[in-house]
Length: 99
Image (cartoon, rainbow, N blue to C red; front, side):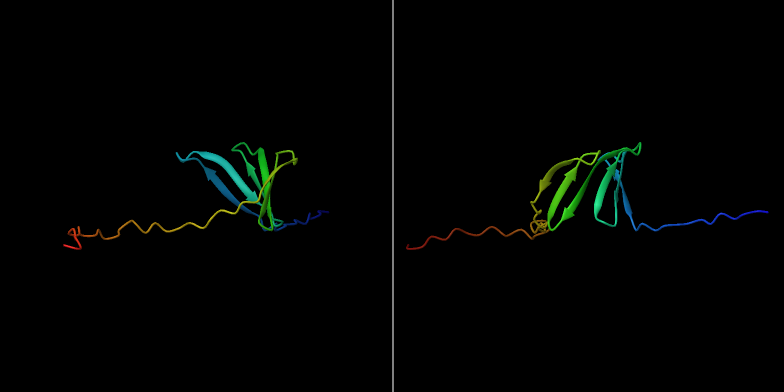
């Protein structure tokens, strides 16, 4: 008699993102859990540490889970560069007043 083993699949709703350096070399990946913990992994799959954002504060942890530090600074939004493709102003003639 044969027994069928049921297969269980769990969806963790995790997201992963590859990490590349400026030359396009693979440096590992990061994975974010449903609880908001982002863990960075090397190309060999070793944990490089993790972070979690809570109410605008980012807490950083070592690969073994020990607390390292906190960053409460929020980056300023990127300002568009308005000087690119701005028409140049024509030179203005000097004006002398009072003469």
